[in-house]
Image (tube, rainbow, N blue to C red; front, top):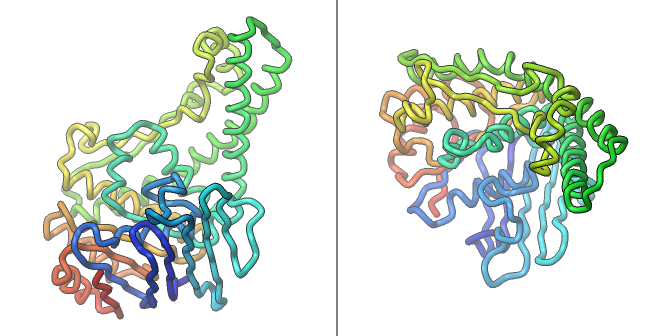
Length: 359
């Protein structure tokens, strides 16, 4: 699968701009602030229907204008696919595939598999569990639409149960029958999600370990583990046993919405004990493992976006990353960097066709 061309209208800092891409490697180079990352984000937008860096849709409209349009033409399995995302202030976002609007945005997820590696990924290490859950869900959802629908339904029921708990508190009322309905729904949906997340981590862990060892030359020992309240007890009894706490906080305190991942290096949290280079290597390995996983499950080479990944990495680790790209079929690759000469020197070692775009 390749993105052949991209057109932006009133998207972030661009009034209008178009690109014709190379089927293998595309390098966006220029000073900070010229829009390199915005081009990558537009490509991400076409795959996921939203920005990677700013999920508030209206804030991606260029200042002083009322709308934006992102258009991309793809070649997927020898078929032309045209995707258009348009947004106008005050109106709902529209995603069209070959001129036909999606009734539900979730139906588009996974159609154009994509992985992004960015400095913003550091949020996976420094932010709360919600960020890491989104990572797990994003990887699984690209190859499993049933999982995505189950997750959406779980979140809907969770919101309804939390609203009911607030209603109990405000009105000093209580209805066990209604609560039981939500408990059973959360149990069924949550158990399915827990089992799929558990299966995912079992498959994902060895892929990740192999990737990290390749990047770091096996110098450090790293670990990735899944933490869930459902590892100790099924969800239904957890909800029933902790009803008083839920009523007090007016919030559902137990469930798969509390799951987390732990990142470790040499048996210590990488957040506290990993250097900037080690953390970046860990995150790149995580994303390359994501690429591998999605490639197997979608049977399509995902597009790979690499935003400023050469920063804060020593030369040996850069060489390892490039050798991985050189030796394997990575499909289409997009790279942004502030140093054109550095980028071109690195890319020449891959011995693939490429284009340089100076912004």
